[in-house]
Image (tube, rainbow, N blue to C red; front, side, top):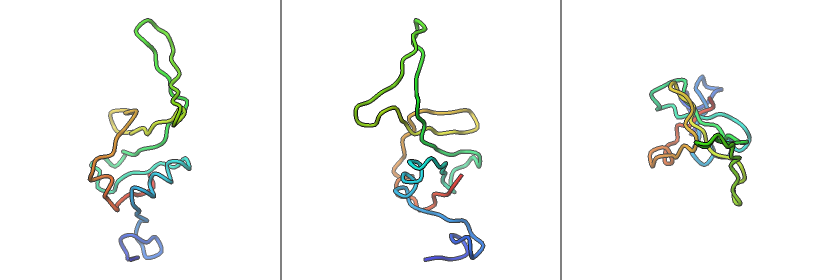
Length: 98
């Protein structure tokens, strides 16, 4: 139910479920949990992913089912590629646009 905590028209911030957060990621948006400690932390969908091997070869990541995409967590210490949601993250209803 809309109230002053979750509705922008009532002075709050729009919040949504993890399922909705995934839909927004696929549309190119950045999302975060209101409950995360660092206010500059968020996740986004990364593409064009590659890495360098120990012998300096560049490997472009490609997967039959998902192509070249992964969820990236961006925080104060840098970027963590391949971020995985916790049970708490998946069940939370406090996802917001970052």
